[in-house]
Each structure stands twice: as C-alpha cells, then as structure tokens.
Image 1 (cartoon, rainbow, N blue to C red):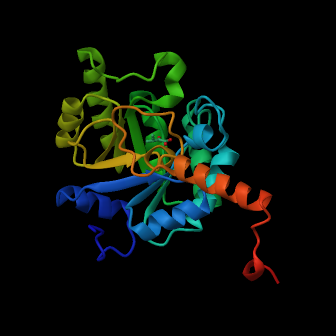
Image 2: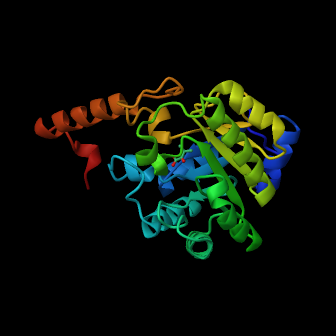
Image 3: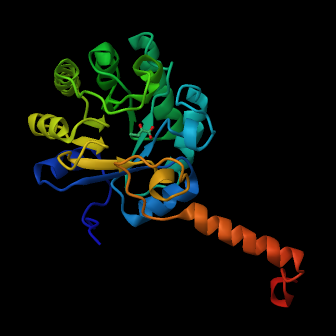
Length: 271
Ligand code: KIV
C-alpha cells in the first residue's frame, strides 16, 4: 500500500511538498466519526466534510439546503476521529456569498466549533475578497472551480463545465486569482482533462480533481459513490470500489430471516 508513513500529520505544507515531489494527493469525503476513523486509519491524506452531506446524508436534491450549524455538526464529528489527515470543511451555500465579513465570520465559526484545519468555498473572481479576508485571518482556504454545485440553478445541469473557450479562459483566470489570494489548493470538478492538466501545470498550488482527469495533483471522490452506498449515481468519472448497498441489503435480509425464525439470538448471544 502506498501510504507515506513518514508523514505524521498532513498539513497544507505537506500537500505543497507532495505537489513538488509529484506525489498524488488522496482526498475523500466523510461526514461522521465512524467513517472518518476508517479513512484516517487507511491513510487518506485529506478528508473533505463536503456540503454533499446535504445529498448523501440528508437526502436533499441539491447542496443548497444544508446550514452552517449542520456543517459544523458533521465537521466536529469528523475531527474527533482524525489523527493524521488534513480536514477541510465546506462553507455551505449562503454562509459566504453575500459579503466578505459574513464569509469571515462563518469561516471562524467552522474553525472554532469543529476544530477542522481549513475550509473550502466555491467560486473564483466573485469570491476573491472573501478568500483574502479569510486567509488574512490565518485560515487556510481551498478553492473550488468548474462544476460548483451551489450554483446548480444558474448552470441548469450537472454536465461537464468549461468546454467552451470563454468559460475555460475564465476558469484559468479564476484559478490564478485564487492562488494569488492565498488558497492552498483548488478542487477542479467535472471539466475536460486537458484543461485540468493545463491549470494544474500552471499553478504552484495543488489541484484536486473530481471528473477532471489524471493530470490533477490529487483526486477526490464522495464516499457514498465510491463505496457503492448510493448506487443510483453512476457518472463516467466514478470508480466504485465496493458495493455496500448490495452487501448491506443481504446482511439485513439475513438478520430479518434469523429474527423471524427465532434463530437470533442463540444461546451464546444471550446472558
Ligand atoms: O461537497 C463535496 O462533496 C464536494 C466534492 C464533490 C469536491 O465539494
């Protein structure tokens, strides 16, 4: 297994060094203590407490409804489980877009109340003032460009972004602005692989891709998708490593059978 055992705690500096030495960065989402414990012990570099919690934990259609309080609940549960990896907590929709003072106040709440190591927010030029203010307060910021799910009603669909030249040029410009503003890394979601490679090569900070090809400095997947907990979502970029839905269904069906048959608990399973 290729976990770098020399790294005792992953920091934003570790990620920077990984980019320089061309070691790929592994990132996965988590929203609760138990899975975060497993992922941290498995050796993942970064856990993202994504606002995808709105979809996969709460069952909403989009990421828009999740609140700052709910993100703080998920973030603090994850942080309690972690020894090695860097924890990034997503700033939810509405907690930073209106002005940079509100953005800073939201970021401070996340850092104080979760114990996380950094925050992530979506957007480029429009959010530069917020990014600068948060970074100035000493809080590491991860950017997020390409398909930004908090803007789904502006885009209208979840299809690949920045296929056209104008949008690709804006993305390149946004990436460089985010780097200048002090971001320590940028997520590139669902954009053409060639564009992601070009952006990754042009930046000194690492990029973490999801549906953005192999030229990024790292990769991120949503845990429910890669573990097969949510098997309805099967985009082309997803590699599914387990089929928990199938295995859990089988296990629970067996349990129901055992209970109905009076076979559980047996003599050794009681006091
Ligand atoms: O919320 C999330 O899970 C994310 C990833 C898809 C990058 O932002």
